[in-house]
Length: 242
Image 1: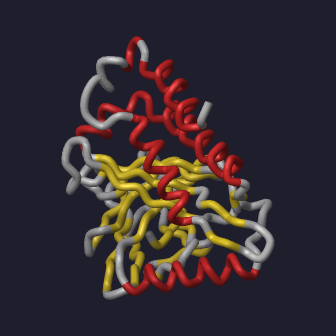
Image 2: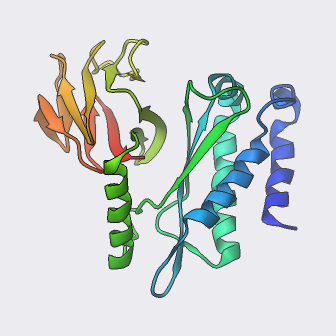
């Protein structure tokens, strides 16, 4: 049985009963699996000794589809992570870090539409080789020349949610009107903002009660670099180029 067919079989059990009606029409979970494998093929990197497959997959969904997927999101992410591991193993490729699957909402997408981005993200116990570091640097340079960036909310050491920074100004805080909403009592209602200027992203504290930290240092304003970690209250956000 192919790994995609096995993935479909597991999904059949996932969407039975409570989820069956939600997945009766519109975007189907198996479409995400097919796209993940295509992105794996397109994004793999050939090293001196090994072939490396992307290990982080971010799916942008329309608002309607995101609401339909919400209650099954964790289970679906687990199945997609397994598909990524199986896909790499079947091809004899390696993952530079643990398989990760994230979901985000893009208001520009219509019902049934979605985007997927595959990235190679170094794991804590598997440092990148020199060649992989060069590839990663090239990717960052390409991102700096154009495109948007992403904030990942880190929970228990792994990304739990993602926020695309595709506006010139993105606000962070407890208010539901903020672009990045944090349900953290240590965050002010409108705590900080990130301004995009050319290829740079600048974080600015908005006079918050508890302050804003970047890489464990309190800042009032800071030009963000790849991998910077922003701490607001007890929440940690990691900045990445998309």
